[in-house]
Each structure stands twice: as C-alpha cells, then as structure tokens.
Image (cartoon, rainbow, N blue to C red):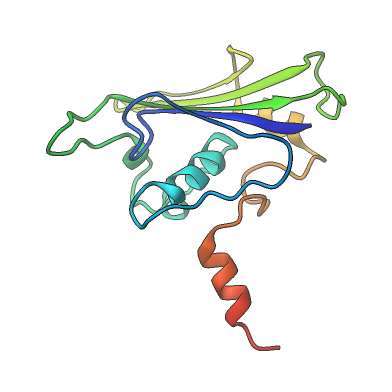
Length: 154
C-alpha cells in the first residue's frame, strides 16, 4: 500500500482544485513560510478522520473550508481525497486503487466516501486498522514535531 496522490479543493488555503502526486520513496514538502505546507499535513490528518479542530489549528471544524481573501470569495465546501495503490492487497478491499474522500460543507454536512461510494468514518477506520494509518497515529510528521524531538534533552 502506498500513497500515490492527494487532491484538495476548498481546503484551507487550497481554494482551487490541487493535486499532489507522490512518487515512490521519501517525500518532503518544503517551501517558504505561509505557502500551505502545514495545510497539506492537516488535509491528510483530516481525511483520515481527525475530529478535533484544535489539532487542525482551528477553533471550529468549519475553519478548514477556504474562508476567502481579498482576491477570492469564500467557498462553501472543502473536499480532500487520498489515493492509495493497493497492489499488495494490504487493505482488505478488492480494489487495486483505494480513494478515501472527506467532504464538509458550511451547512455542517460531513460526508466520507470510499472509492466514491458514500460510507461512514467507521468503515474507513475499520479498513485502515492494522495498517498504521488513521487519525492520531502519528503517520504525518510536521516540522514542529521534528524541532521538538531535536531540542529534547536525554
């Protein structure tokens, strides 16, 4: 199982549809302050089921929806999809590609999809059990976590 693509639309600073394609190997997301690096890690955590707005660096969950700017109007829906290659069959589903999607609207509607079919967060959590993925597993490492590890004294 390998993450192959991340799609974001209306999520935090990603007002427009954006795709990040991940080639095999180690991936590091780098860039200047304020370019959206932390929003990428937030998106992964969010689509995997994170329910605590505080861990998404917000006060309320609807803050993940693009709020608008001087140049752009706010959008009404945030949607993030993770694409996984399941060629090795680690995920217990009969698909070679698995797409997990989460959508949240300003009206409060929150939906999850597995390969575009509506499902529950529990269905996704059950599928990911035993893989090391899921909300709160620490699979996403942010720079502040690395800084804390490097500055800790033994």
